[in-house]
Image 1: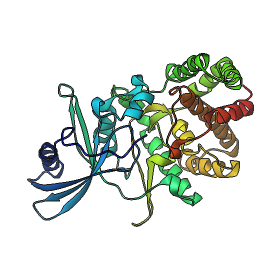
Image 2: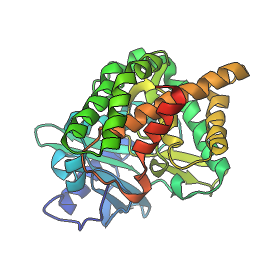
Image 3: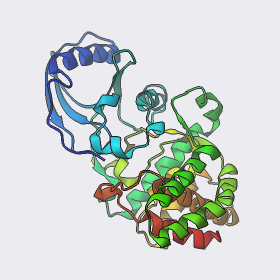
Length: 343
């Protein structure tokens, strides 16, 4: 979802950036600091918005590696503007998540240095720690995928009892029945315009059976979710003591079934035993006291969430081709899951 950009002084002036960051760092460290210089490099990380890596030199001789994410609507990358549905965009969402949720929970996510959220100037800037690590999709060790699943289970468990409090955060996406129906209706609309007979048959089948999917999703406990917990959005760092799991890109964060996040994590071309091993690692943390019977019910519920996620991508945007690390045959996955679930 991103491309390397040339840094344009006309887009974000370096001196203005320095002044804003200096003020935010003073608030963060609660002490006077002066930013002497900033070295700016376009990030290779994929997002809907331009991201820069800042090497910040302070007057005390120290250096900070800072991520600068410009969430302003005018900064939205052209390919994302064409593909990302407008109704889910909200520049305040990720800022709110870092400032009011993640920074309070000691989950190992990127340090929040501060943000600018100015509707009048249409300026939404987010400053974070440049967290070390590699994207999980580049990691072949299944045990590290399981560690990411356990991290996810801990986060969901820690915030599951706060859903009533979270509802007051108006910028979070609410994954209710209407949200999930939106995607199947969009997929149906796209199918009318241009699709193969096989795809039209699949969409018709999914529409006719989607009440069953919604009914199942409505039985699942809600919690705070990342919304796009794909392996490309999870950094793994093994260099310290233990393993640091650091999810990034919280643009789609909201309230909904926690298994939607797990469905994203296990999407892709896994063998069933591998997918099950990752899911069981999550289950061992999120539901440690449940019986084997409940584990089977859990895996079935995960399949429903995987199907809902596949439908979301079918209804995402017509003709959109995702970057390689996000590429997947969602039609094939939807068909396989519909067969498995008897839709």
